[in-house]
Length: 120
Image (cartoon, rainbow, N blue to C red; front, top):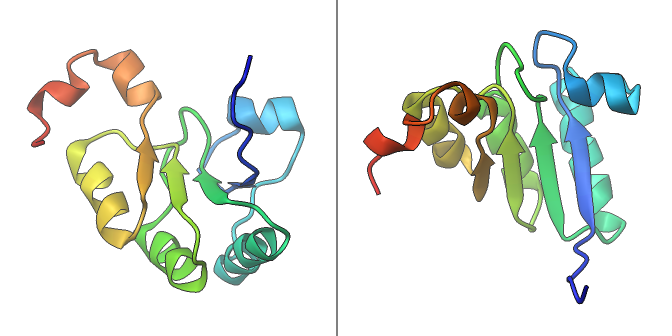
């Protein structure tokens, strides 16, 4: 298929409910800020080229701006954030905190006009 494989550190972060990601992977989401930062840094040191902080599809809340900023300040590779982002304010907060890319899923599934009102 000639697809580029990009090593990605995937970190499941507590999002307030049992998400599909949690059920499928049977993993426990991280809650402690320092554990999240350390895991992201370890992933980078192990050769990952991206970090993905994920609260899970349909999470009650997304990854906090505080955690996004702390992780971004500690790594030199791009940071992706997803899960629990339901409005433009949360989307902008994630970018302002340092996310290079924000994944929107459930919000768009529930409202196909989600992106219509965003400033480009």
